[in-house]
Length: 96
Image 1: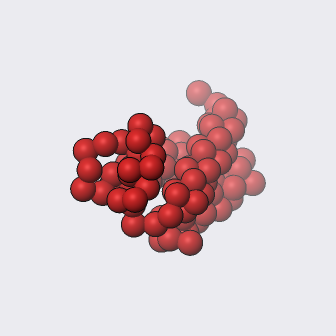
Image 2: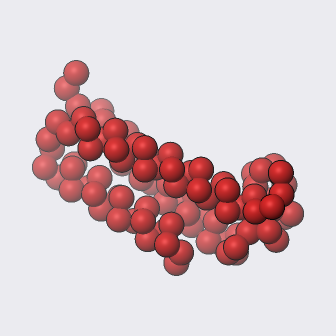
């Protein structure tokens, strides 16, 4: 797995810990959201490479430019989705 995959998994563990403690951790939730956004941007940048095309628009061309296989890209995308879902679930427990 790539460093990005490892970092997202680490983020998911942090989110799970927050859920387990069921605390109102607004600052940490904001930080986790920012980290997810960073991974989305970073993954997109890697996938684009030197091309101006977006990965999702022209996957075959961008995949050739990516520094890892399409499977790795799909794994990272799946991890981002899972982390986002976990964070949304945690955020819904927040009391305004």
